[in-house]
Amino acid sequence: MKNNQTKYDVIIIGAGFSGLAAALRLKPYKLKVLILEADDDIGGRSWNKVLDDGTIVELGGQWVGWQHQRMLSFINKYKLQKYTTPPFPEGKTLFQYNGKIIDEFPEEAMLLVNNFDNLTKEIDLEKPWMHPNAKLWDNITFEHWLEMQDATVYAKKMVGRIIAGGLLSRDTSHISMLQALFYVASNAGFDVATSSEKGAQHYRVIGGSYKIARKMVGDLKGTDIILNEPVTVINYDQECATVLSMNNNVYQGKYLIIAIPPVLASKIHYHPSLGSQYYGLLQNFPGGDALKVHFVYERPFWIEDNNSGNVYLQEGWLTEVTDNTTPSDPHAILTGFIYGNKKRELIQKDLEERKKLLLNELALFFGEEAKNILQYIEYDWLNSPWTGGCFSGSLRIGCWTSYGPYLRRPIGAIHWASTELSIHFNGYFEGAVLSGERTADEIIKKLKVKKPKIKKILPNCKVKCN
Ligand SMILES: Cc1cc2nc3c(=O)[nH]c(=O)nc-3n(C[C@H](O)[C@H](O)[C@H](O)COP(=O)(O)OP(=O)(O)OC[C@H]3O[C@@H](n4cnc5c(N)ncnc54)[C@H](O)[C@@H]3O)c2cc1C
Image 1 (cartoon, rainbow, N blue to C red):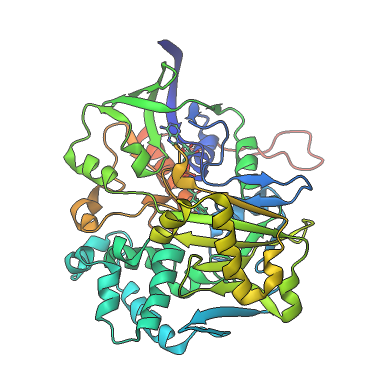
Image 2 (cartoon, protein in one colour):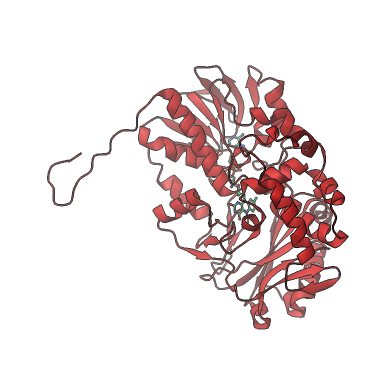
């Protein structure tokens, strides 16, 4: 066992957006900060695959929303180039509905969405468990709520697939109504959460979202970052925490920020015990199950028929497809998403069969040319030991009302971050940043440190001026 001699003010576990944002928030206070990252790279759930010709395929998170002010501030600060999506907005979005292909979101489905959205407005984001119907909604599935609505089976299926799948990466029968309401409310309602224009999918960054994380690291001079260092054991009390890594290294800090998904935090051994409420919370927070797949083409042939490349399917493997072409890259890309049970069924087939089944579905909308791909790319995040699911974790049925109050509650020297714990923009990069910054603020308050004054040097002024 190797004992690191440095005593840190703060140790951050995880170098995803939440961990990096926490470290950046602490930076002006000149504290000794260490980040321990299990993987061989920073960025967590954002990751680029670069094709031979330089085309970037974003395997993880990619969009930055119109409302995502903290993420946009990093993009501006680091002078990164962004562009609005989709690249061909004038084209049609197609919907497979009741056996037909139409180019408008069906009105009856919209009515059902409105009923759901009206309920999201009643949710107190800080304490969803306090709603008078919280117990009821926490103990019924989203599917059950849909079944009770006065709407056609087609509308229910469409809305169920978009909300449970497209937003929460699950089946309607695997999430509670309260989880669905909280998530959509946290992301400013259905319209914002599902839209490109002025919504959560408004921007992409040239070079990928991973580039933002890289720039954040570049901005963290003075912070120690150790990769390939998974944390396995935490000893803690009110005054300090000692962390043991899988490589048998020991680190000591006054405070600890655990910036990893709750499902992975549940695998760490804590001494003393966190108590049954915390364990219950962490163990009932499984990651989502989505497969993000990419079809690389020579050119965006779909725009020739005035299609935007965006599709929503009511039946089938894919739930949604979007044009993911980056203006600066040589090739065109369609990206699709498969969720929950469909994903689990699909992943059991061999690669060639998966490809064939998905291309057949694309051909229904874009013709036989859709089958002429240059490359097919997929990545199963649930298979990654340091992610534990995709896009993000959700509390199991009945667990919001059981464990909600413990969600962000520090215990001794331990503070909790990750997108899963964010009040606003939960599940997104923005939520990760907000939760990281919140934990940093909690610690700054406890340390009672003041932000040092920055000495400004005025142009043409030889003396330093305050
Ligand atoms: C396929 C996909 C598509 C998505 N699309 C979008 C999108 O378009 N827009 C958007 O805003 N969001 C999107 N998201 C969600 C977004 O990626 C996440 O919300 C965000 O990256 C979460 O950041 P985080 O810091 O909370 O967690 P993570 O990114 O998971 O970071 C946690 C870090 O902790 C490390 N770690 C884990 N366990 C340990 C341990 N024991 N010791 C040390 N280190 C550990 C991990 O390796 C990881 O680097 C998507 C996610 C996926 C997977």
